[in-house]
Image (cartoon, rainbow over all chains, first blue to last red; front, top):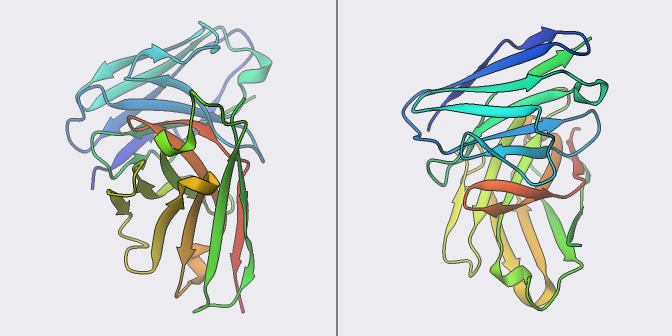
Length: 106
Length: 121
C-alpha cells in the first residue's frame, strides 16, 4: 500500500497568516492527490483534487501544488472558518490512503 | 441535491456482526445512484481517516483495506439506492464512525454524516 505522511501534525496560526501543509507519498502518485478539510463532529469536505484543482465553491485562498511524491496545501490569508484538520489522500490506485492529518489551531 | 445517509451503527460485542447501510436521497433521472462508485471510510475516536472499502457502479469491482479483508464485505442494491457494509468478526479496534462517500475517479466528493460503531464487551 502507498503510505502518506503529513507535516506538521499541528500548526498554530493566526487569522491572516499564510499557512502551508506538506504531504508526502511513499511512492510516486503523479498528481492523484486530494485535500480535505474536517471540523469536529462533521464529515470531511473536499477542497482540492488532482493536486491543484480547486473544488467548486471552495474559496480561492486555498491552493495546492506538487506532483510525484511531495505536495503542499497553502491557505493564503487564514480565516476564522479555516481552523480545522486537513487530510491529504492519494488515489493512484483503488486502495486509497489518507495522510494522518494536520490540525490548524489558534 | 443528493444526500447520503448512513444507518445501522451501534454497540456490538467483540466477535459479533453488524450491517451498515447508506441510502442516497435526492436522486434525479440524470444523476442516478447506479452510476456512482462508492466507498466506506472510517474514523476511530480522536484519530484520522481510514479508507475501508470501494465498490464500482455495477459491483464488478470490490476492494477492501488489509485491516478488514476477509471480515468486511461491501455490496450495493442500486434498485434501492443503497450501499451496505457487512461487518463480521468485529474487533475492538473497529470502533469508529463509518462514513459512506461517493467516489468520483478516486475523489470522495460527497459524504454522509456517519454512523458510530462501538465494539466493546
